[in-house]
Length: 212
Image (cartoon, rainbow, N blue to C red):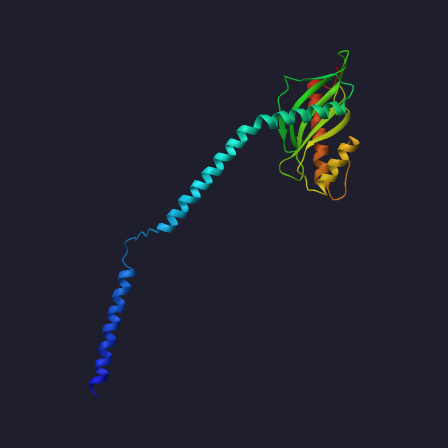
């Protein structure tokens, strides 16, 4: 009977030693760094890398296949906007010596001089990217008189403004040919007004404020 507690304590001590030894093997406590390799994590990382590389490749292929078509569509949209703003114009010539300019208000992409059927200069059309609510900007064509003092009309060629808010300003502007203020769409309206101002400034810079 007296030996039973001693035996029990001895057995417990042996179990404790074995357990401690097992823990030390599985969880080393020395100062050396232990590197663990998880095969499943490595396989998953490789799969994700392949997927990302494939997506990037496909995007590059799509861009290469569609960039010419997109450029042609943009050119056609711009030409249609210019002819809608100045229907009396027979042709439009790009002002070659004008360099694209940009500011916090937007970017002037190109300037075209409009000519009548008889070759008379009748005004300018300016391609502008205005800064609206969307970070993509608003593509617009602004028609001006020959000295850049008066806006003759505005046409929106591209926009990703908020549907039902900023888009109302875009629709109203295309309908009237002028920038209309719409309640709740202050940023878009201000962006279009700034774009119009940039267009007038560009023409005035080219002409020196003088017609012709």
